[in-house]
Image (cartoon, rainbow, N blue to C red):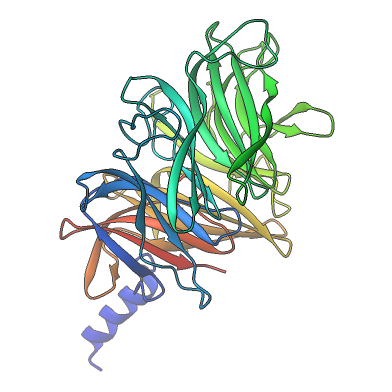
Length: 415
């Protein structure tokens, strides 16, 4: 091998670890448009996303299932805007509805086994929370609560808006609401798939008050949840719900390491799992330059020290990030795993998907799907995104935009 070729080889292998072969990324389908990236079920056996259905030429919720061999089936449209909502006799407008909380992922439909839950708007423009359930291979959609319905456990208030409906592993659906007095509340209800019925009534788990308010970014796992909220000082924290005590427990680092000092820290996107949390945050310096970071108290990590921060070179990735966000936390065998999105400062127009493993406070970072990476049959990634719940059982489903202009749904297994 000539010295020139050897130099090129060393450059590729050691200085560009971000550009991977993509051999472990499996493309499941090509789509004209993907609206919201996939959210994977808590048991890792299925995932759901929204996109354009070529057959009906309508927006749709797509579902893919994991087969017995560990591979996922090609996603199929389960519910479209042509689907008539049972008992109401009308269809929906889109998935999900747009609004204050409609940034990528948070309003994603979620799935567990053969139940999908989501927020949407009826053709009559009435908002609601709905669930789809599959019996004998056929999906039917029913309403849970609708705009204008009386809000249980309140003094005559009614529902105004709904956000972030998540279904947990026990078939309980938890969702965030805004009531007609602008207060917020978190409600839950449970479904029995075999009976296609709800058990009991919609139950309020917690409501905002003078001590905790401005609920935002709900994360549900293992029957519990975490949520971002403000306290009377105006500071933002993550609160973890305790069913035993029916309380929201405030959680946050003692300090935000490597963040600009003296400025408000904005918390985004908490991810909750096994009593631990991870979330992204950002702050601006005096020159208004933002710093983004991801913090977690999982994996015996020092909660005040970010596992990843922008504005500094990451030698193992050969990347300096301009933005990191949308983490999903998972824990197995005393190791914490976080999938997240990152933007390379060299070209911050397009996002990539990355992965962190935290064990005894030690953080290992890897690239999963990044711009310029080749996957499949000479397909090159332009950008890659993950959804609200992006990783379970080591599986990460992704929405990937190719340089050819195509969009694909793909999956990979990281542990």
